[in-house]
Length: 214
Image 1 (cartoon, one colour):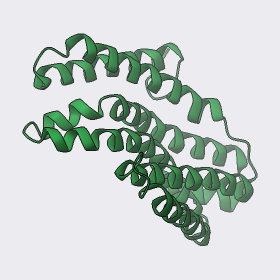
Image 2 (spheres, helix red, strand yellow):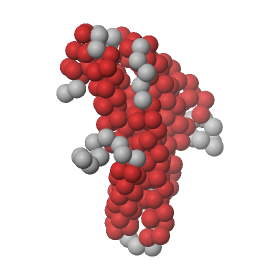
Image 3 (cartoon, helix red, strand yellow):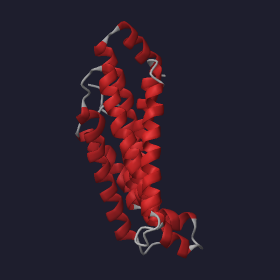
């Protein structure tokens, strides 16, 4: 719903409003993506054990790949609204070019990493993460070039990432402490602990959307 406001601010050349709208939508994305991605990274194995309790060999093979993709989730999520923002101002050509660059990176990684026994199927996940990283970096460079505004990277990226890391570490420690319990009980408790620390960290850093009204 914020994209029409971005298009309007861009048309009116209201850089103050434009900056605020872009920062708000990117922060909202990172606020959700950061704890999800880091949580998936540290809890990939118990998540697969919960979903596929009778397929232990497959879980042992796949959980590293899922962990890598947890980081890819964050990069993918933050790139998507940037693409939408660019399309909202009539620059749909830029996301297409950036995606093509990402595809090239993914193809190269698959060709070189998957045949290596050390990586094997993990090479596909690593290639996906690297391609999303390239897409994310190019997206922000394009955003800066098109709008010529300086975004608050502390608000958009570093604060949610810092809180997300704390969330992941807390969830990992909680699950390590509870790992003797059935995964059906240990995993939700670990996720709940991580989520609590994430919200607490965000609150202490006075981030938007959860800051108490004075």
